[in-house]
Length: 301
Image (tube, rainbow, N blue to C red):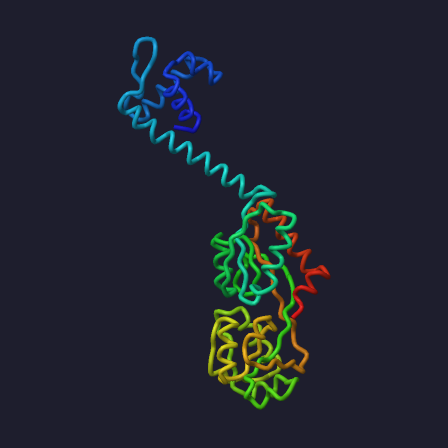
């Protein structure tokens, strides 16, 4: 059976007249009769019975009518949902971003995009880079702001912005009297460090490896707020992005004296995958936005 057969069946069931239904559908009466006959053969039951000059649904035809009407309604709704989701003006975007992007950058780029695209709908998810990348791969998310992670050859990474990296120290720590610290000096202290779930872990490991330094981390956690919580309670120093919420914790921030590689945040989408017009528009907007002077001023900490 096919959609056309089902639509013919519904029309005949509601008109209860073969000739009138054929005229309404702009087909010949023999074509309509053949379509219904083939449908009855496939189902193995009669769907209609003659009543005078009209026809009526049989018991089985009435059962079938209830289900087919609902099925066609759901199919129509599905088609409309997909059409709405890919429409450039009213589509939907499933947007994910790492924790450090949640305070300023992700909300600001969304707000600015919606100023000229007010009917686009968003759903948001915040997580670490590895989990977001898996959700992107599984098509749970459409676009994400993440660290670059090895092993995702099916994901397209495009540089979006750089994050300033600083050191956070407990206020009672002797190092908090300084404003500048080297990686060599930092390696002499216990660190509150990011665990392997965080996209920052590989970046930080590389910094110390390039400096030929071995570190001691007595606490390893996933997100920035937890890092700051342990630092503020004296568990050690932390090297981390300079995020706005640092100000909410009793910690001192220090600059790093060594020249270090930039911490780059990427916009990631699936390679060789269908991108809706809405998603293409948002992706292009993000890449342009973070290269603009306005974005640089907004993102500045």
